[in-house]
Length: 84
Image (tube, rainbow, N blue to C red):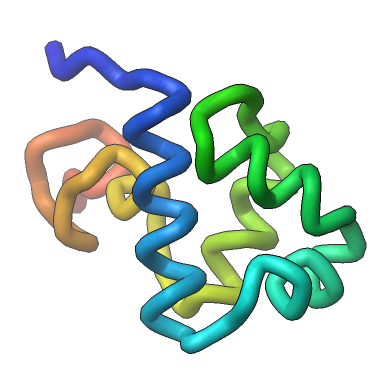
């Protein structure tokens, strides 16, 4: 099983934000949080809750949680991506 850390999730949040060409402030405004909160997530000092993680995924255009695990969408390696 892959080890998941606050730092690795923060890196993925930052990557998604930057792909959308958003500043931390603009990203924070879209999520209705402060820029400091975004900085803490991206720096691995805290994590968004599961509901905020879903909102972040929507804002950055990702369909499933695999993105935050550092995998491609539809990776078929984890339960969230396996098709029945």
